[in-house]
Image (tube, rainbow, N blue to C red; front, side, top):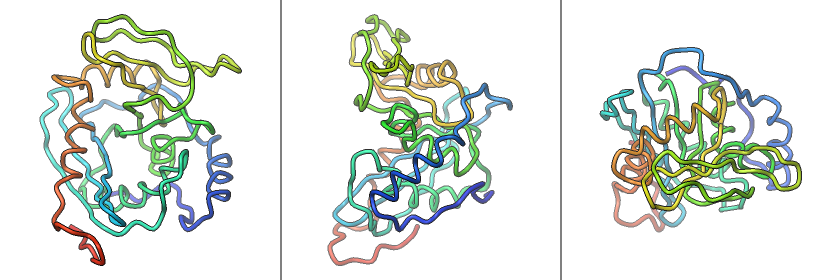
Length: 234
């Protein structure tokens, strides 16, 4: 698998991590996709005590048939800090992605992209590191305000910074009459395209298939207890 386009230290203080986000946000590129999409991957991380399990599920596009899945389990040093989820999860996600033969054409994350206080959520961070199109699909709103979208699948409303009017993403209805999800660009993709992928990937459930399947895979632990254990990399 191709190596990262950019690297940086991960062993940072929260303050230094925020400063790094602010220094990297200018590298985010919001632009139309330039290559045909044949695969889309979902990534997710589940935690059990001090350990994390990162899963990547690759699906053929547009059939949405799973074609590959990989997972990595390891101890995680970073605590949960709001706004700094990338520092907790991306090192494991990168280790999982390295097990793939080829990079997916698009990566969907269970988290935010530009809908983030520093406009540099997990989807942006991962996309900039890999220079791969990424989008964030989150189940809960983190920043911004929005009108309630219409009740039918595909209805959406912009997620807006109330101070500046900047559009951060969108509240998107993925199923009729269910709560919306929150979609935002990560890197090398537009919001319109991000919404399209999210809606088309929501086949039967509120959560789109790539991240739904990645979440299920991330919870298939190879050990029953992680207390005091050194987990193996799968």
